[in-house]
Length: 297
Image (tube, rainbow, N blue to C red; front, side):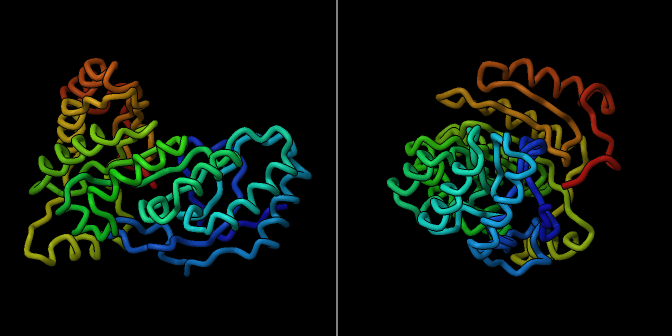
């Protein structure tokens, strides 16, 4: 039996996969919009505890072939620590095909190309990276802890090492006052350094984060007005209009925070996706629409 230190989060695509907690909390934990790990003090779990969980999971699910390393950014762990976990996973799960984890830009920038290539060879082949925005002003206001150039370098570095990257950007993050700069700059960043997978999320603030978020976004005197669903659709449309990645990017908007679910490959399916957004703008609540009470993190 596995006993998780709650709360436990994972990407939508990891919903049917085994989760092993390699760390607790998030090593950065200062992004203005994020409430996921506010209740936890970051710490790496002792290897013996991680190994015990791996062994317990292998006894009940030996055929597991995809494993997600939680919590907030397991890629912060030193390469040798990660290799010890990966060695144990490969030994206990003969069918293991893929290990994945959340990462921050700093996690990727601090590891050498050889570190990343070695982890890829050991089956840690997918990282989830929160890009959030390509606007320097927005990244500064949300305390992302990364610059646009740093974000692009992290994306390029991961791709060069053979890692697949699933990146997320957040619609509504700049509010009504700065949305066009946020969207066009974010599209420019993705076009400059395309990830393997890309998801747009809709800004979703837990009740306890709503006031602190707005206070942080306005502390420099810049106003912030929350975008409604119609405005977020306008952001989604502008983002897609500006997307012209030099390599195919698998695109999704299936996160639980989103009002409208979209799926396709960019730039090939851009026109079809834009038509879906236009249809939703005409009649909100139609196919693919998620009512507000059903949205979550």
